[in-house]
Length: 418
Image (cartoon, rainbow, N blue to C red):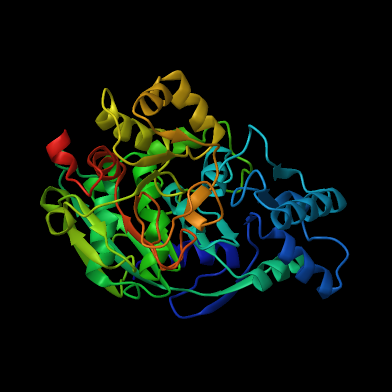
């Protein structure tokens, strides 16, 4: 009987064959934390271990509130810097022009690698599955224990196989696919499962598109989400690998799955997730014309160069009707967008461009909503209060749909603008 990706990756890390349902203890390859490294450090110190297990296996990336918008955030950052110096942690991305959103940096800096066991104190750590890693978010106390012991236990998850065929129609993208999947199976449809994306359409997708899919695995309850580590991945990591311990693993043809789904990209239409849950799916025709007050192009889901190109293609030569905030995923993406003239397109259209980071996605700064306001966003969550105010409304959509809506001041169908 064949093995799923999760069984292979966790079995390799454990050192013996495993099956879904078994409990294993493994050593993680990289442990990522962002601004929450400060409270994790406090818990770590209570354990009584003077030094972290392997300083070079920890990665700290400031991104949730940068530059610090309040004195509380400034103190938080200060504590992290002190801990980094005290522990001799080499992989630290501070508030500099080398940083960006944590999940983007983990991928572009060569930490996300096929077959690795990766953990992060952020639920969207599942993003690294786009590179074929077994990658998952964990809690703060768990992370503190991992820093101290170099160990973490998992129940080997059952797996959900999603096979994708066909080609996207005009105005439709990977964000529309993942919102459709979540709308179909709901927020708990893949609880503690390993979601595997298969099929010729996945093979045809760019790594950026796969990152969008894997990023939102957690929004259907998944433990991890993963795409095959094909030649695109091998080409992307060549020369930047932070370890040589990686291995391109993938499920066997005769692997056993708890459930299987299939999607034809040609059947998809632009869509949104309506307030106040990610699984509140609606095709664009159901919400078209809904008034908005703000549009947001950013977050760890859709702020890569490919996303910015799609949005700029719609905004070029036009002017937005509502305040529109653009936040590239990293300074590397920012610089590329600058060199390609995309930032000029956004500024000419009336957009506000801010420094790479999470920005309003976490409701900390750079675009908090007022009571009663509505935002259309490329981010991954639309819960009440997510963008800083519990009386506001958030619609999730693709970069093309967000850009088209920004032009009209209401939710719009990108196919009509294109």
